[in-house]
Length: 505
Image (cartoon, rainbow, N blue to C red; front, side):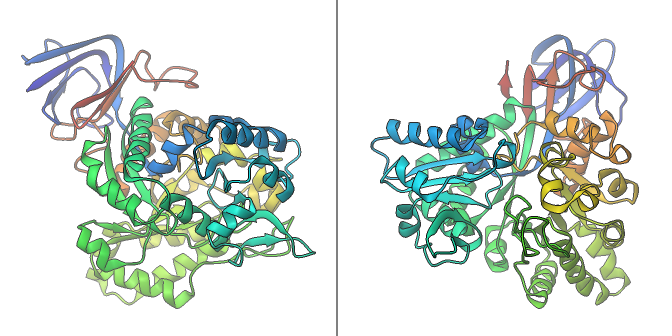
């Protein structure tokens, strides 16, 4: 069946030039044009509307995003007391739940960033209590939760000078808590959460998400459920699993491996790997992999024909990742290097990168998967990065303009639920970058979020514009989002993914 969508303007971001209608043949674009439209089986009139290509969010955690939709009170908390009140309210309401689990707090937004004490956590409930930070790298847990998760003696289970539990969990202790909590979630509930996350994407004009599955934190069932029902989700998906198990990925028939596999942690948790100590901690964070192990993983993944990626935020972690890739690249001949560059191996986040390392990324043909909303949330003077690193280091983070100007393939994501699954928040952040010299124009930012993200997943010939033969992934707005002054709160009136109308206002 052919469907004709008539609007005031259709921005293709490619060829042909902007049109007034788009003809969709099942799941593909057949034509975009102006003037008298062709015949169609069905006509959808969108008077006054502007159509743009669907956004591609290059870094999403669907299950966690679904969970976060019930934790808006946690994200809105602006003090320790408000967070504890939200936890107490949840415990009082969920009398039959064996585990009280919340997520999304960000203490850097509080006037007093001191975290709740163990005594305060214990006072919330006698049942296991788990409260996860917005970046997923820190958890707050009472003793019952730590015991059930077998995290009491794990690395990162924090204790005070007297040896008493503080309730803060990082690194392995944090991972164990997440894995344990996820193991208690039914398949049906996981489906519900992933569907809710995908619906949230559609409601914000996102037609494709790169699902960053975390089997070491969420277990294999989370991956299995996703792969089983991904075709029924309202948006298209790209599966990227955080694992080094190459045989498993090949058995699943996937083309990418690694994704959000951590080469280090986060600045908020003070676990990102730095070349110099944190201003407010007496350490530099830590890398996850030994140099030889990381290079071996990259070598084997590349030779298996996979696109490989890792999460790297701190400058030391980024430098380690680049050195590992250089070991693989320099062992290749000229023809093999061409194929290496075409693979577009990814680095997720790549925040604290120097100009010299941007050049290394470009020389290797690596792709950067960035989250601009991080800069809006934490990148300005007085923000988290300034407090943790000092402005001299923080001011150079997230150099989007430099990466684009040096020829780096750059796609955009939200890392939802770390930041909202809303492309206009990311675009506004790019336009208002803390460093004026790193800002992009509205059109450049949109292209990065659409065309750039399509290139990250090798969908250049399928997504990223509205040319004939491309996927029918597009969004309609009641204003022209490329021209309107204020994009805050911008919402679509229609979202179409693979030719399916998946959201209508």
